[in-house]
Image 1 (tube, protein in one colour):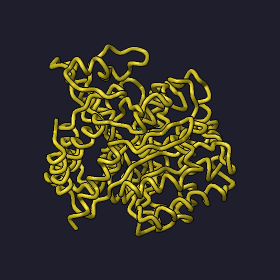
Image 2: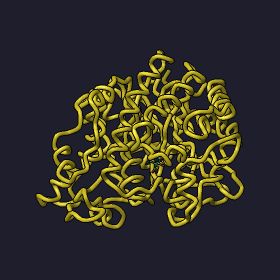
Image 3: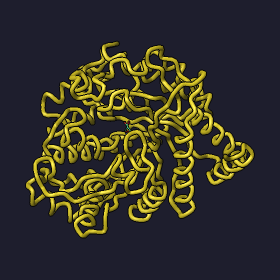
Length: 467
Ligand code: IFM
């Protein structure tokens, strides 16, 4: 076993690899933590509708209460402060601002987020705001959702209202969270809201989300010119599950549909040619209007990078639900490849994380990168009022080492937000997995800082003590 002395030395050595102005934060999302779904005029979102069908959620539970953060936010900000973080990434629920998606603004919703932002600032914590984290107002879904081009205008109007209210108090705007997961899990695989299963619809959805990103960047630049703006993409290094030509081709295709389909247009290259051909053959291509690609490529100040694991890919014959002709190897299958896997079945491969960050830096050259999510779910237990989670500490340590290595290779990484601040509602998995560095005891709403939370605090303190 490692002694405390070498543990401390190791921590200090890691902390010393980051600049002292690094943003150390944690991330959450509105539907995953807020609860209070019927309070202060909030409208219904697609996640309310979807999660109220128990068949859609692993434990049958909706996110109506989850961490009750809507009422407990002062305590939660206190915890962020106690852990020494100087950044907090959270999302705004569109349906709290526009209960019907468009039209009448709900003042109470704006006021709630304004209070949150001001209190964070008073506590010395930078507010990083995600404007859309998957919770479309149901009223807009009823009109076709993101596949309807009018949703782009509705989003721009919502962004404008939020930007005018919160203004330059925000440290960074993130237009969207992980369009790949939202469009594929929610519109093609049916395992997230709104539960769609049509690849063409998913790709039209993705196109409009990207378009709305470009439009929002322009709106935000006009209203809050001093606040950096970016988009957060889910990225995963892909690797063939075997050396077979088919698996190699499937891994390349997975890189196309997971990574390049989103990175390329945001960075001005349009959609990747190999994927245009692949989707074109199947008749899945979205309708793209003249000027769309220019708008999507509106320059940004940073890329938000979310990554959790390396995707091992196996080729499969095409068929219904298998239009991508590829499956991702997780759980026991990933274990059989020789990897440790997390509670969500994701293989732990920190080297691939370093390679991914370096690749994004070299191939796309974003002005700055923020790791806006990274973390792991493990089975946590409370023992004598404490939560010992050595596997999460090891995950964070190896992945932060990967970040440091990527920075040493030239990547301009400016901050890291661990997913997540608190155990929370994990979408289609309900409350069955825990990602927090703080434990949430849902029946009592008691928060318990896990060992990983204390480790993170120690790392931040060691980094600051170099000032
Ligand atoms: O909980 C999610 C989050 O909402 C988006 N990124 C991945 C996390 C873990 O699955």
